[in-house]
Length: 155
Image 1 (cartoon, rainbow, N blue to C red):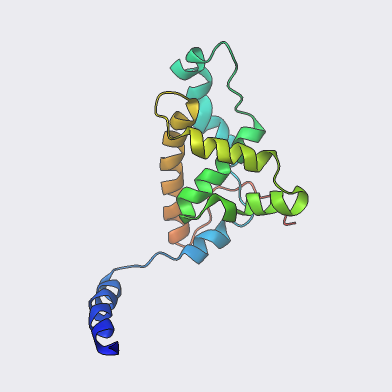
Image 2: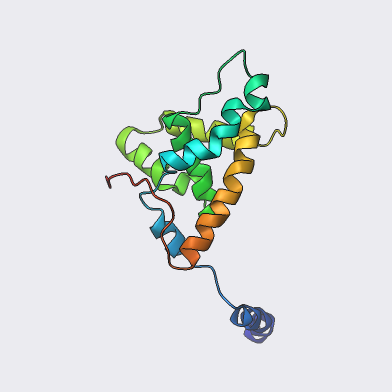
């Protein structure tokens, strides 16, 4: 019985061994342990949202892109970089340790839900801006570097 399993696993291990590099998810998570999107990067990332067609579409109610949205967007960006679940994000973990499920957790849940609807909300546009940002951060971390930082003090 054990032999057939080994026979099926050998090609998989050979394939993994032949890959040029494996992703070090632990390295990514450690690099982002106290990370949020830096305020300067956030201003640059959201500049078009502040003055573009999406801003005009929602002119009857202002799109808030301040620090709260920056912290919220940091969690889905962490998810893109680490390929982890939002509940494992250090920001969410900190939020839960300090005050239980609070506004950040609810904001992230809403952002994750809303980005599924392509033209109905600015979250989708924001996600399209965060994806290339996350790809750049991934490359930096995978090469042993440090992503652009705005560190939170450890709790």
